[in-house]
Figure 1 (cartoon, one colour):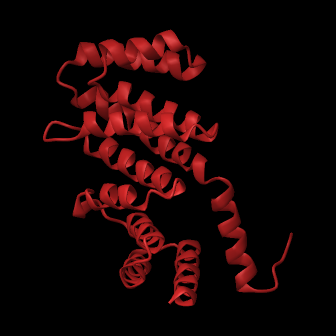
Figure 2: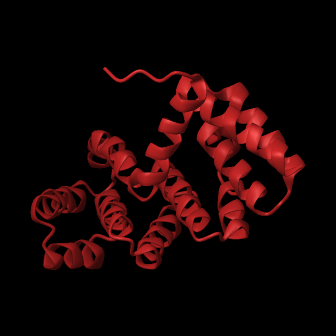
Length: 207
């Protein structure tokens, strides 16, 4: 087993991993969405429509057939499964480096899941991933607007870290530090705490 001599080396390994796979991060979130996919089936008012959407999604998720995807987006766009397909497709596009098209799909999910009758979970996921991709393009203002639109009840360390990143990129260092400290207070994961502490050290160097 490889051993690292210092805590700094351990933290750097974590950072290198996140930097290498930052565009693939959406895929991990998709796994969580799939685990609750049964929720869509139970709660959708039109069970027949949702059952058909689920069947199409299951087929498309196996072979990624474009005709099935188009049918989902045409006939079942207001179902959770059609929006789940959009997030999955956005993941594939982001992993291929096609950030603009990935963002286009994620903004579509956000718009479809907004509002009183929208799906709060998919809305949250879409906003988080929009913010990540906007940050990767150095669109700090757009990322911050998206993050600040998240319901305060859904704010977690990840949201606060991303807010800190957006503020750091905008050179609003005092506000960035505040967001990182709030993230540190909320975090329960040691590796995440280590990353936040390193961000705070980097912030101090800029001030």
